[in-house]
Image 1 (tube, rainbow, N blue to C red):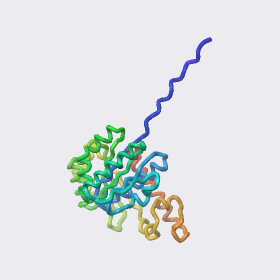
Image 2: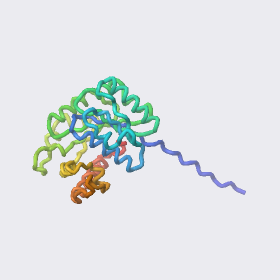
Image 3: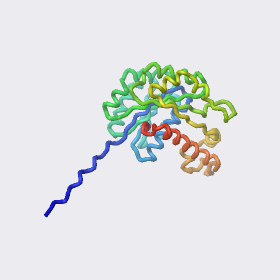
Length: 263
């Protein structure tokens, strides 16, 4: 009697784990961008933690509170030593739970730069099976990009994948047909970043955002069809625009081939 050939067991791939670190000035869209990446990860059933270390804008911790499955405690203050301790504990928590991580240290100060440089962040993450992604966020103002370029050139964030998100929502002109980043696309500094592997991606404008904020609603509740505080629903056009906006942003990311760089 011949023995049946045995099929070798399918090798199980390790879980995809990413740590994405937001870089850029305050109000550049970084917190919203990270919130979207966490939302997509949760929707796809991936383990992820939203690490809100931003002392000025607690958006992430409002959406993903520390008592929930995807939140972590915020640092007690914005001092470097406190932030360092918070980062160490947060990284340990993510490693313990085999989770990806979205890190928001806020924008406009040097604490995150000092932390990343001092801790050799990318080396630590890679040694523990986590791939680092550095997410730079810039608006169309030249000062916004000057800030981002200075940080990138300083090499505080190195040895990881890097994305430059061009936030069209910060364009101040009412003429939407104008490309707000046309000047940047002709700037040799952008070409320098691209030559080093940085991928620029358009973060589209959600032109009805002010109406959602006026209704005290976030984009995720709108997409989910949740009612406003008074029990009424958001204007259906605003919901349609929000859904299409998220789809357009995801399309831009997939088209650039960096979806695997997100949590």
